[in-house]
Image (cartoon, rainbow, N blue to C red; front, side):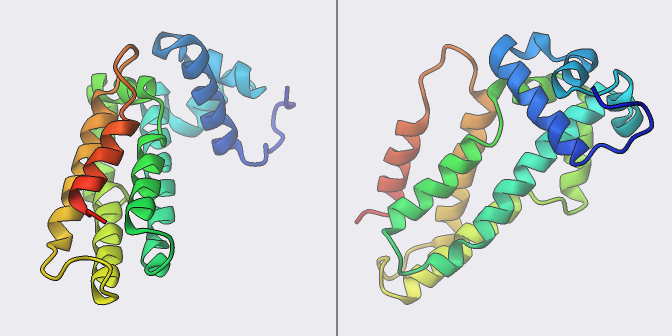
Amino acid sequence: MSPRGVAIPDLRERLFDAAERIVAREGAAGLTSRAVTTEAGCAKGVLHTHFGGVDAFIAELVLDRFARTAAAAQGLPGRAGQDTVAANLNGVALALLDSLDPGVVGLAMTSNTTSQQIRDALAEGAPGFAAIQESLAAYLDAELRLGRLPVGTDTATTALALVGTVHHLLMSGWAGTPDPRGQIERLVALLVPQ
């Protein structure tokens, strides 16, 4: 445990990682501020001090993971001409799908405070699904220019279809439902036939 008053390096990431381990191990019901700080090896009040409470903490966790995926997707246009179009799209789609445990998503959706904080942050420009969609469209445009997609491919709608489907699968994925990875791969094959 870190001594009181001593700065903890990478505190946000340490708490976020702890929360994800708890949800993976115990489910969403196990995610309490005390469980997170104990798992992270921090003083029990640190989550409330830095985030103001569990709802705000969960919102920040969701926004952080979406931003991480959006940052990875930004590099996708630079991959035009490399690997296959389907492999590149599957990579981003699966990264987004794996960005959050469905239990964390469930917590975010069931708390009005948390979901509103996420919506507000996204409306103010926090990177999320819209940023990922823009990166996918830019990537598809680059592939279209290289001739690796059929002439006339509607790249904006293709990006929307992929991101919208992943969003749906991420938001509706609950324990006991089929693994959606196969659905993603079939959708990509439908959208960008090779």
